[in-house]
Image 1 (cartoon, rainbow, N blue to C red):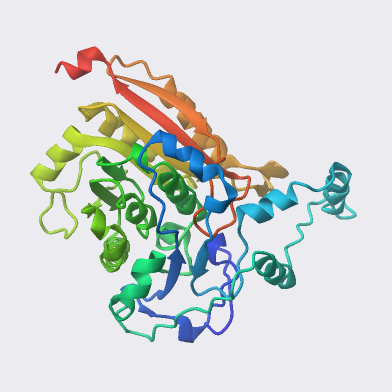
Image 2: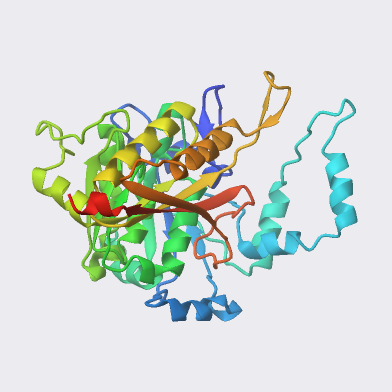
Length: 396
């Protein structure tokens, strides 16, 4: 653990790509022996969009985020201002850069940004260099010793792993969660007082931000170890959503099962009362960057179709996704298979004519300000699905 090591089956989120994987930064080992870390993410406290008219204020430069990340990073890229500057490059330079990316044989030769560039970005942003708070191994992390500071800066602490196998990617922090959180912070009037269901919540980052405005959030995923981590994050961040009087319930929701878990032996089972509340009051569904495996994507869409078909009210689903380009030997080309499959599933959902629910699918433009520190790359997308029960369904 003294240096970053990767196996062929290791997955690492870009959020912590430049984080040193060093033993003394580890908080503890989880139940399956994976090293666990804690990252601190700061958001503006005075974000409070109570109506659609308030959105105009957010377009001003003065009201855009001054965003800090104090995590196990020593250098990390990401700011909408950097992205804007990069877009000002002369088109001739862009063409030349494209040619540079190809080696002598015509293969794609990706040039990564050097560490010096990362540090220069931080200088340009006039940000003080923030060092991580190192929490000793086995220590319970909380805000109690620094309550005043947490309440001022709206600091979210997230317990997570650094790199995992594909089946455990929910234990990492992903850019799609930040994108969805940004949208919530910019459009809080849309979610005020709502009952929300998040699918594939992972570490719980998006649910925590949603709880600053929504009334009840069902934060769901699968796997007791992951759900334990998620619940710890929600508990320690009560200072973020507590003043709103919101409630976050961590529950198991397995997309490969037709029914919600009601087994009392499971610590994250659903009660009959909660299931009734879910179907009677839910008006918003969320999912952040969960579309990386075709079988799971199919299961996800089958799950939301099943849930939406049983909801009493009209509802809106917000999905963030990142297009990940991969060179495949099968096609001998750069492809984006997982994203392509996601788009096919979106189209299939919109084309459903079952007489029960009408689905309207539309992309959301990423023109809203950035309140969290991450690289909002052009591969990130946000989608909205409006699900309207038809008359014959509402009369049942």
